[in-house]
Length: 456
Image (cartoon, rainbow, N blue to C red; front, side, top):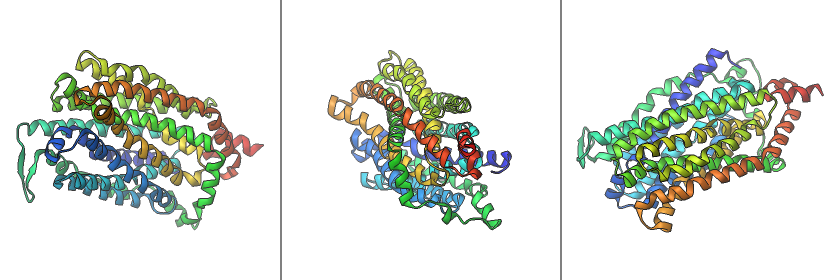
């Protein structure tokens, strides 16, 4: 492992990359009304662009990218993905139809699919098990900072162009004001690429010492499949719990600015600004708490700590998820939504670190890709769509978005809690099996259980 200073420098760079990722991903939620008006889209079609169009590309691309993570230079792979998603975000500023917007968002999804597999794999190599929770928590704060910045910055841009339908952009010509948002937020992420390429790559260091090449370190696909078959219930429940909480977070996050506008008449710029600030504060508290608490439980011998914290987080989110759509004022709704985010944010730490504990060290890239295929393919894509379908199909009135949130949000929290607690025993069994199979040279990487298994 690298020196702590090198590892934390890496976390800082990845933190900044993730901020740009979420800024590019979340800004669309502020632009629902003008996009619907200009492109003639329904709530369901908008949700498909926010969710499915992005997440399906993200999830499908993540599988081969996960295999690449186990074989190639991870900083170089992340730099390529960063270039792609920044470019496609910029191209969203030129679209003129629903298919064009969906295609550009898919490109953003493919580029961002490099992010989490690379991060999960690198942080696993940079930090010992009892420190990973904190490292992941610090990194994961960037998702909420990025989401908040997207809402705050987007709100400022929307406010600046309030009442103006189109503007003349240099070298571009006439564009709609909502397209200006994408033209402004896309390019800045490219400035981070040199720092990404400077990240410590343990495999590069190993090759310099004449050690094993990365291609031979990665397990065969048959080995990965065999491991999943042996521990299918542990993976299924862990992935399900994480995905259901992701549906709750991404689904409500996509629609809260519109909910504030439709229910309370709050201008979208003002609602986005306040919700962005709430997301930054609540998300930061929740993700750090999830990492610190699960780390302490791990040190105390609770090998199922990551999944156990996920379950209690789902239970904690439940009353807030049920209450915020019924709030009498927009201020109270924001406070209650913030309480929900504090608990749902824990999944940003416990989800990815949980996958690391369920998969042997050499499978981390592939395992994280499978996890993200499920997490994003269902959580990110279906989350916004669940509430849109309830609004369009079940209630048939966009003004009843609050009712869709009141039905869907608590249901997702309950299902996430059920999946978490159902899988605790299988989770412990899988972690113990990985520890017993770890060679002595990797005992430090598998935690206390590996050391006991090695001595036995």
